[in-house]
Length: 201
Image (cartoon, rainbow, N blue to C red):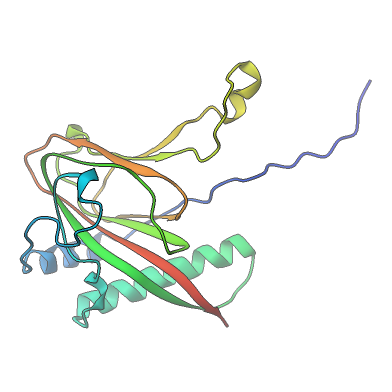
């Protein structure tokens, strides 16, 4: 006996990937001209291991490569929003926080989520030694307190992003994530940022 029913897939999490190797190379050159000493942001120091981190104002500079970066990232987020809402609008976007990490051997970043923003991004500038770990793990926000074959449809607990020079990921701020231990000798350089949408035109 056939039955009529309506199927809804609720609470999916959008996750977008872009690539810009040329811009990553320019940012790497710029970061190499800067001096950094430990966790300069002084934010959640206890979850960061063998990492140096800039203050959270990296995009506030008016040097050409930073202006180019802001323009590119804002255009990506506009594309994301128009894709999600099936529109063709323009948006005023604020980069509320922006910073870079330099990871050395045995660096890691414990589980966390970002606050006071709607969208977050990670731009992999120098991926280091790819066979030495340091992947980014995003956790499934849907929690099940019982597992059997009836819950297989949401059993994926993590989404893994393997760093690659120029890879850029955007994700909603509620997604918890962490960086596994990176065991390479070459530095791992990452730029991260938080965004808020101020207006739609």
